[in-house]
Image (cartoon, rainbow, N blue to C red; front, top):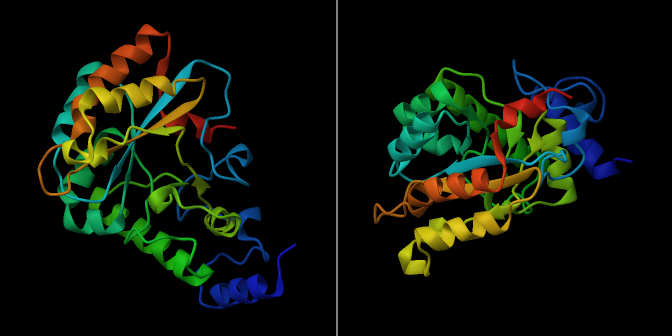
Length: 249
């Protein structure tokens, strides 16, 4: 049941035209604007492993800083003919449209909010603004239709925040393991250590989170770790899959 406060917030959003008029819970008939809808199997909770028993793994990258490492990652994926899904923030898309366009030309684009705030302390209206503003920025930069996949900043999820993004037509795609490559050498990480974290997490349906961009030092350990991760996954009999494959129920 939706409590009184949540009903009031949803009513206000409907009145403002921020949610489709399809009942109190927009998930019943909502979709990411002019895009595909996630299947029911991806709704109702955060997704940290894909719903499959096959030996498959999905590679994903967040983008919120600079463009460092993007060309290297895209070249490696292109060389191997492999898919990945990228989750840029809207602010990144506004600042680096050419990078987002290059990514979107070859891979799926998810939504990582506009300004990368913690969602647990936001109202439904503010969460909606973050998601919709990011969607608009990613569309404008890429010229592509983003996927109905949302990744929470800092992986900070709550039952209400997941319900809010589901109501907006997005599945909450989190991860089985983060390589922690974003910490960089100053954070005690190396490309080998980042790869090891991903390899240790391999399981049917695993989702690996990595990052492109740097915090100013130009070092992108996940770009260096990517070949190691792919080689190890394939050696263990895993196939790299595209998250877009899971839009089909």
